[in-house]
Image (cartoon, rainbow, N blue to C red):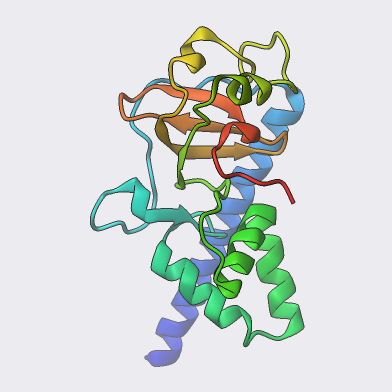
Length: 191
């Protein structure tokens, strides 16, 4: 019976990983074809268990499910006991920002912003820095500067989605979703 339950867990995990890989492939296809669309203004959806229902307490883990801050910290502790192959697999699953977050947790660094789905961040407030953050997207309405985005400077938001072109979709307390370059996040460092 225990072996059957274990096999069921393995199958369920494999199915979840396959579904996440398919979703990532579809997103990459859409981005490559330029079919990325502005999402409708609805509340963000999260998968997995989040008993408090508060997005600020969760992060997205490498399998596509919600991960609490405690789970990130647990993963960073387990990371040092992993063999080289397991570390490589974990690093490739969490992506560059996840790797930076794990490294910061292992080294006890605080005060940095990480560009990960589910992360609560604050946008730059200073006028010149805010405008300069859009320099990679001059005259573009989706990721570039707009008056609507200017009105959100200095506000907190939740990162709903990240993209390979180093842009994010953020959800604000009023339910508005806007796309920004990563540079707009206060405390973000591209290292």
